[in-house]
Picture 1 (tube, rainbow, N blue to C red):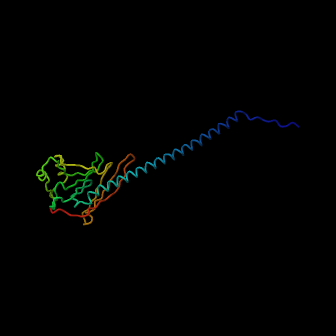
Picture 2 (picture 1 turned 30 degrees about the horizontal axis):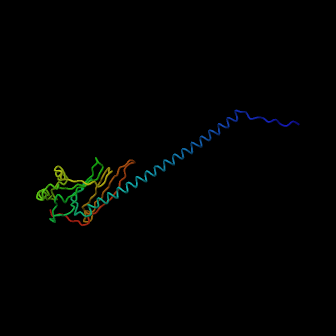
Length: 214
C-alpha cells in the first residue's frame, strides 16, 4: 500500500494568514497606543490641576495675610462697595477725627489684575507745616472717599502697594447690622491663570472697633 501523499499548502494561503496576523498586530498596537496616550494625558492633566490648586492656595493665603495686616489693626471701616473698601487705619494724631494720611483705600484694578492699597504720602521736600496743611480732617458723614483719593493722586501724593496679582474679580461683603457683623469684611477673590479661574473666599476682622467723632 502506497503512503498518502503530502499535499503542500498553497502559497497564497500562507500569505493570507500572515496578512491577517499583521493586521491583528496593528490593531493591538493601536489600542495600546490609544490607552497609553489617554493615560499620559490624564497624568499630565492631573499634574496641571494639582499645580493650579497649589498656586491658587498660595495666592489666597498671601492675599489673606496681606489684607488682614491692614484690616485687623484698623480702627473701623469708613466705606464699602462691591470691589472697593476704605478703612481708618489709625488715629496717629489722637484727635478722634480722620486725617487724610490715616486713610487706606483698597480696590481691584481690572486692567492690571491686581488688588491694590493706596495711601497719602507726602514727599520729603515738603516742610512739616506744609504737610499739616495738606493733611486735612475728612468728615465721615460728607466725604467722598474716592474723590478724595483722586484729588491727592492728581497732586502726586498717593503711594500704592500691590497686595495681590492675577485677580480677575473681587467682591467685598461688609455688613453693618450688628456690632460684631460690622467688624468682619469678607473678600471673594477670583484668580485667573492659563487653565481658567478659581474663586476663593477669605475674611478679616477689625479687632478693636472705634469710630471717629466726626
